Length: 264
Figure 1 (cartoon, helix red, strand yellow):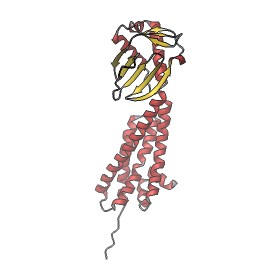
Figure 2 (cartoon, helix red, strand yellow):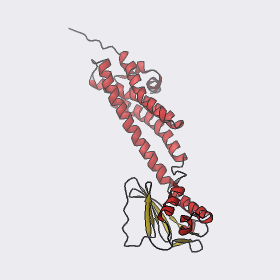
Figure 3 (tube, one colour):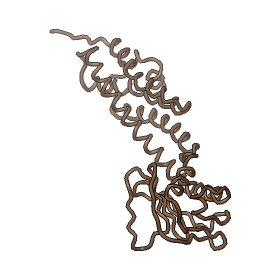
């Protein structure tokens, strides 16, 4: 198996000698490369903060745009007090103190922040990311009206307030990012295999279809290695290189295969 993996990475001209491999061996080889790739994706996703530092500023600008409101945060009681309102901006939907008869609309690819009397919830699309009780916060009183007027003290505590709410949803967004990157990797790999298969027909059309597919799956494994380094160095450019590598490997592999036809 080690030699097979080494050839898939370093010696594409030798990949043709694995033309008799069983389907289980092919799947196991692909799985090993896939796991190597998603390991680095997991490290990248779970060590980075998926929440942009500009989020508190965006929410603050929503309040400024909305204007005057009587909503205040009472730190001693750990409660928000005031009247209901909602506002939107830049894929963020802020809902403040909704009553039971208020119907909240969750939009696709929109982050909805619901600030209730004693807790806050974050939704992505219609999926709940987190809930945070205000009792867990250590901040002073502030007024939404003062934030809308850009008063420094209230704005400072409001941004800590928003930071804490989004920090509670960090794991959700990290997991979402990881799952998204895993599915993207699978799709990209399959696209590489399809293009490799088409290229292999142009290079060497006499090979059996089953053998051709098998070798193209092996040639595509180099994409996972390229993807590993793309996530390691956080480089989009390396992803594009990774997508091209299977085609280069296919070119080398099928140019080194000679099918001998015995006539009787």
